[in-house]
Each structure stands twice: as structure tokens, then as C-alpha cells.
Length: 116
Image (cartoon, rainbow, N blue to C red; front, side, top):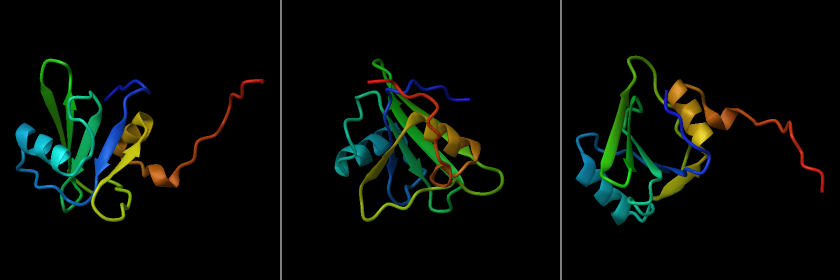
């Protein structure tokens, strides 16, 4: 279980990524494609061509972490992105995606509304 604060931004890289890339290769992809600052502490998520493997790159002020998940069966629900680039999602949507839920098919319900 990955617990993230709501302030963390999550960026999904468009297209397929070669899963043989390690920290330096993924960091180079972030910089090359302008996905953001790899030293920001935000998460950068990459998926392989078949859709059954993910890598997450994150900086924690002392070094990079690479988290890797391989599904034994099925694929991750990956949103469509037009052209090269990235898609920003909420940390809660990443938790759903890692759990096998398609975040694009869910909707959030408002249960609290602050009076003006």
C-alpha cells in the first residue's frame, strides 16, 4: 500500500517506456520530455508496452527511489494521452490505478461543502 499526501503531484508519462531503464534513464526521460523537475519530490509513473508493469520515480531529498510493480495477470488502466507528454493525476487516483481500478470510470462524490 502506497500512502501519499494530497499535496504530491503524480505525472503519468505518455506512451510506453523501456522497463530496462533505471534511475538515470528515467530521470533523463523526465528531463528530455519536459515532464517536470525530477528533484521536486513529485511522482513520475512509467508503463511498459504490454501494460502489465509500472515504474515510479521519486526524489526524497537524499536520493531517488524507483518503485516497480508487475502484475501477474491483466493490465493497468492507462488513460489516453494525445501526443508526447504527460498527464497529471491526483495521488488518490494513483492508489486506485495501482489497485486495479480504472480512475476514469469512477466519479468522486461531494460530501462536504463549505458555507460562504
